[in-house]
Length: 325
Image (cartoon, rainbow, N blue to C red):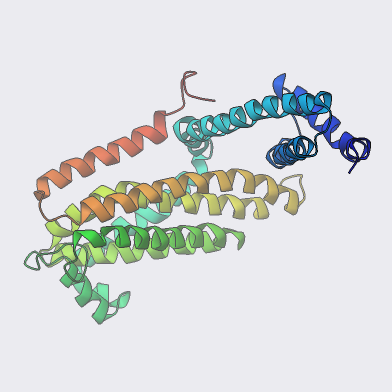
């Protein structure tokens, strides 16, 4: 292909790329920045073709200059993405939780209220556990937390090499519960309310029963560590779902579709934070909670510190100007 034909065919692309480069270098908003990596790769291909075909040095030098400038912007964009992710974790997510405190409070009352309330009822009236959990599952739970069993939080002893398998299982299982609780909020919030109450009742039934039969020390020492992140994540997923439901119930002056779209932006960000919490919870559950070596008191102390850490993070992180924006 002649150089003149090559230039005519791709000149518009190069000019558009040059304009985008200038906007990025000046720090201006570039609406097409999402296509920048693919445009950059295509420019690199054009440079390689120009060299291979022996086109003029003027064309090659011009393309090479754009490639070098594009390389700098590409990796600056990537580092900015990392900074944005870090900023979300350290500041934006806890700020969003505080901003949506009404939904968070409502979800927490439903979830933790049903959990604590039903745990007390089952502890005082033990037969209530069989109204929500089948006899076979109750027996299985007892085997998992029997102080004489030699294992903790699982039905059989497993090798340390299998911890990573359980780590993956815990992630998938917990994400499934969280997403179910969140997505069902589209049923005008009733789905989220149902799963918050249902999960609270189930966990409370297990906690009350195991405490009543004398397995409380093994059970609570197991759940207190990862529970700080896992239980908080379930409540926050419910809050995100309730926010969706409220947008449908009370859209205000907006159309329901528009109100739902605006609510979904913040709800999805909440769920991103929930995924982070569940990832941490799964790691703790797989590699710490199931360990039988540490004394129960050690686990209680570590668990208490983790609960304080989660509470302090949600209440105070991102309040200062020094947090990444």
